[in-house]
Length: 412
Image (cartoon, rainbow, N blue to C red):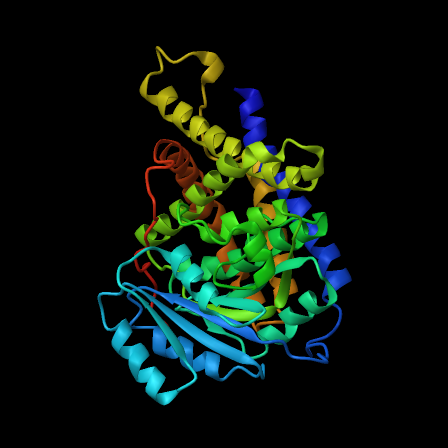
């Protein structure tokens, strides 16, 4: 039990320092060019794909924001994936206002991956910018993304930096810190290693040729962004992270909504590991080994954490029968808790500081960092434990993984 307890303690401690160091090095090397986008000598056509299913509350705002984009060579394609609300009607109205808007209508809900495929097949652009129907893409985002493709012929995708728009409630405020101090730092450090676990499906730009060679998005996975990230990199395309390419998103504000979102993310991760893990045995795929290893160790940590919690309850419920070697007398942190809390706060300080150049007042959210281990370690661990058997037993049973509109918080 001692070795399991040390693993539960040391893994997040080690990864926190790993992410902090990696993010700082990335920032020093790649984020020192100021806040003005680089000069672009030519503007290749970019097709913006907006897949939507029952998005009547958000689709108008998203499309109108896209038409305010400063990139001069765009085509905007909205794909209505069998919506049963007023999405189709609103898209028709938007077409009257913006004649250049193209709309593709799928008669039944086939899932986000198939909607993106339909948009890709109909697109004319050399690059595909995929934007969620509830995301507001920054007007200068493409000016930061396109140079990566122009300067790197093997760049297959560039993922951006989502910013939390709704800031009401504890969960939303914690996610502000999470996107900066966890998600942003992880992508920075992984980019330093040369491989990224996943692009951010909220807004990401692809080279169409890379998608074609990699087989496009799989309709049988619940997270098309994780799957396509692994596909691209296993076909030797580079995936890059551009923190200056921003968008604004709305995050869940309730525990049930957050649970469903993170369960889907966890299931998508294990599906990618199961589907692509066997193809990584070759030495030529060695650059993907750290990504797979990090995920597998993280999954093992989730089970170790849950096992520790179960041992604690059984220690108190069955004191006469539970073996001493598995006894966990308390979950109240002692010196280990102080160390983890200190490192957690330091990690949030570093992450919020790095992202403060893109959003003012980020450091004010440091107070909410103290809730992160309590809320998110619990949810992350439990969703991973639940998602792994789900992915194993449901594998191959669904031809199309359909989507439902996620729960979102209110925007002030």
